[in-house]
Image 1 (spheres, rainbow, N blue to C red):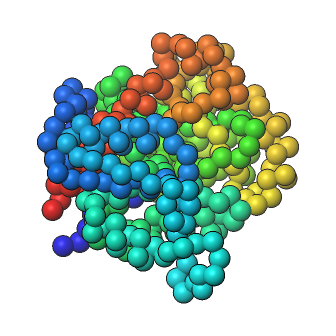
Image 2: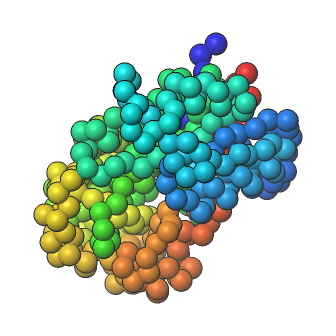
Length: 335
């Protein structure tokens, strides 16, 4: 039997996404269940985490399972991912052994591994999680690499809770300033899930340099076509915010400047005014605001926006627990 992984929502149909969201809503109403009784999951963190680790550990526990947390290179051996590598450096064991051994121990493997931010041509290959999926003999879950599918589901559930049917709702994915360049993962994922839900999506960014990887733009256009929505790019703040039902903020680094961040910095610094504030939100259609968290207040969004009743970032963060339980239960149930 072919193993079903949860690496990206693009591998899942709209009907399958809806089913996961329905199950997540059920878990939100009743948190405890037997779906993972006697089962286990290995959570491998190559990068820091707060919400992801907490929600996965608690989610497994609430469904009767057990989570083992590992930080390769810190409390576990550093792992080599290159095929044919002569391992005379810092890495101690190869992914070919790691994934297969863990598969003998646990029922699920989840991985968080950010890009290196040096060469997008390399980072966009998503080698770490793909290697786990290649060698593992149990389902693998993406806890954030160059996409963040668990965050997508939490975001979609929060929007549905507040707006109901999301079809043709105006959705603005806005770039915001940050002191350093960040991963495009959440931006990629926000684009994917909003278009998959049939929303009218505007990607708002300062210059064409901040448009997302064409692979995700193409997926977004396909999703929009299949689900009755639309996708466009704008560099005009007022035009983008006007009439919006949802504003979703995220910082990300410009892809053409990967490995040359000193050259990108002046562009970022010149666009601090992309911060989400009350004046911009006043242009919306009584719109909701959200962010994946963590968020630097008064850098990405003002205190007034974060503390407003229309901010659903906390709802979205809570929903990570429920959607991840739905994902784990569905993958365990496939056998």
